[in-house]
Length: 90
Image 1 (tube, rainbow, N blue to C red):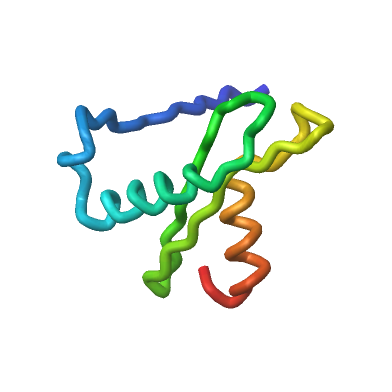
Image 2 (cartoon, helix red, strand yellow):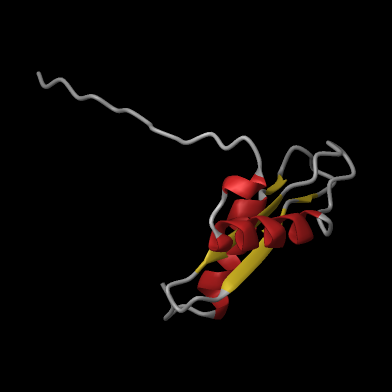
């Protein structure tokens, strides 16, 4: 038998003014994406953004469908978009 420990650390910001310039831009892009979310069932609009190694920012939003709760979360939407469109970019 082996013991394993899993832990998570995170930082809590009081407001956006504590973010770096890059983090603020990512937040702004996620908010832009959230405005395009399609969530007629849950009414829970979500946006996400990612920064690639090349410096490009991509954004995505959640998408619900009639077979609710099946749908795509914002994070998966943006990751799959960037991976499909630009597979060579990390």
